[in-house]
Image (tube, rainbow, N blue to C red):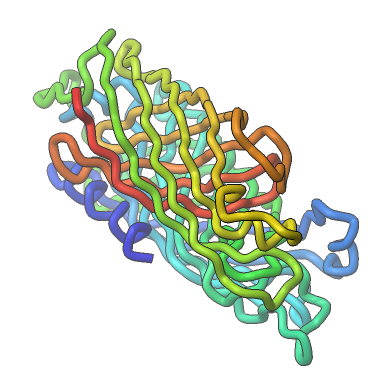
Length: 354
């Protein structure tokens, strides 16, 4: 929770000079998408909800505003019923996100909106009181929204149509954790306090790492998780990652790294007469990193080269964000998964040596 909240702090610092402030309302409707056959019983109706938030429309004072076609930042609270009030209940919480237009012309834009946050789910799995809920095992979860937006901005208002996917998960720290996927369609209305103004050129050209430059980093990760059967113990996870980054044109970073992982749950999950040494894994991965001023969005795919008991397959993935805390220090919040199955959240700190 502290790391999630920490993501908001650098964002606030990034946009402290921006003058285009607004408030938004987004009604949304969707449905539960069962991504496992064992979840089919959960789909009984449609989902509806809304998001209310504060909007910061970048105004061109910084170079990255121009590089990303004047994105907007959104901090908000939300409420959704989950389409099954008896088993899943509803969810509410807060999120922080960014809208990244592919293009912007005469007030029209089309692009991706991405947000992360914390969500409280009213009905979790309970062996006695709610045994049919095999999707969510905890009240506190993370929420991820990824989608597309078509927007038209006017002098002091904007309207937009959105389509996307909302995902709820606790990263396997409490089972069950199949997760909830909600495709949705929404309408967004934003009212700005003052008429929108955009600078033709930037006064701050900070772009993070130098273009066409290498950097070397060490990342220390800690986490916890559970394994099936439901109701078992919680196990610790520690990892040391060393990775190289190459910055390309200021809007793309290519990353390659080595993960050395100690996952206490592996031996317990496989059972049998195994020593603790079987809990060690080593993996190699490659990643695409999107640098947005003092934040990096990370999308990675890796393969184990040492995986003695192979609990979940040879391939793994990472998705999440890093945020700059100091000149060489970055916070890390990503989720490690095996295809569509979450393994654990990666909470960590990364240090840049060069």
